[in-house]
Image (cartoon, rainbow, N blue to C red):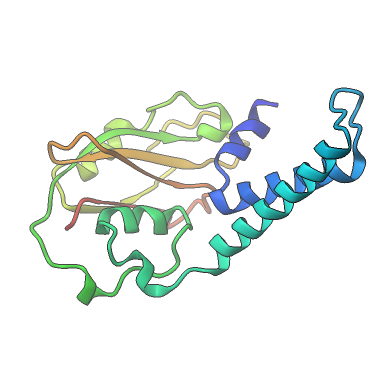
Length: 189
């Protein structure tokens, strides 16, 4: 059950809206679910409307992206969103003004969180490779990282700060292929 909950939390927001919409539509159609959820007529109508609205919001979020909608976001946030698969296209280079690189300060690195690995088990290796740089492509080498579960397909997650700022940025790779996996950390811009 814990693994299912972790996978649900790691799902992109677009899918969360669509899944919630489907759940509310199921409540509207089925009405009574295991005797624990028993909406009346108005509750079923409300669930149907809410389900349809959530699905529409999810679809608009998924297919309503335009290339210039990310032009006002900081470049490090765009890079983080690209790594997580949320953004497919970065803002045009002309829309992002050049600025001196702000150094990365690694907060944590975790290899195999989805396999019940200890949080922060790859922080030292990630910090050695990326601390002080404006951006960093961290190569995930399973041979040099603590392997929490040899038979489990592992993920990799990183958290970092930019310079003296308080904001914590994160990026993750959900499924590693085992070779040439790279995670980009960035404070450029």
